[in-house]
Structures are given as C-alpha cells and as structure tokens.
Image 1 (cartoon, rainbow, N blue to C red):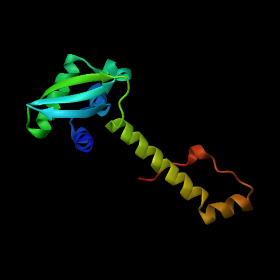
Image 2: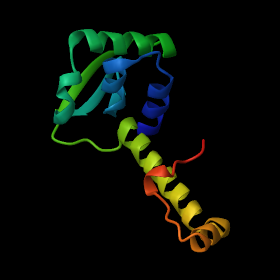
Image 3: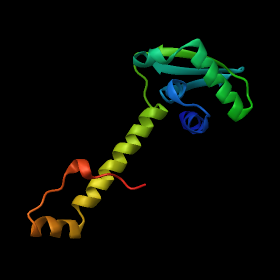
Length: 126
C-alpha cells in the first residue's frame, strides 16, 4: 500500500536524487519479485539505471528482499511520500498560525502596542 511504501521510503538509507526518486513515486504493485512504482512525467529526470539500482539496493538492505523495480510514467501521480510530507507541513503551519492568532496573550500584546504579526515569522514547533 502507499502507507507501507511511505514507511519504507522514510527508512531507506538514501539521500539526494535516489531518495527523491523514491519519495516522488507511488506504489502500484508488488508480485513475483517485481515492485512496480508510478512516477509523474514531471519527475522523469529522476529515473536512471544507476538511481534505480541504488533504490533497489537500499530496499534490499532494509527489507532483505531482492526486488526488480519497474517505473510507469503517468501524467500526474498523487499520494506520493513527498506530497504527503508537504501536506503535513502545510497542516502544521496552519495549526501554528491559528495558535498564534488565537492566543489571548498575543492578541493583548498586538492590541496594546498596536502591533502586527508577521505571518513569515510563524513556524511550527517540533
């Protein structure tokens, strides 16, 4: 499933473009020793034989399974680990902004000193 794929991607010993290849792919199927992934046409530049091999080796290192990878290019893919990550970041930012704008102490300071809140200064706390 895409949940399992995201979990695996987040644990892979990868960085750089090979990691971006994984993060921008969605799980399609896994059967008969073949892992099929879909990738958006917009990310086609991530695909190369060397990067596929690095991803394959990282999957083997993490799972102990030797899987052949195949990529299907699609006009658009949704629900990739990268898109999920971006959505969670947006939700965290929205929550942080809401907490600041609705905080009674912040409201009192803004009113007392005729202040403004700079939206760019608000960042979620991890």
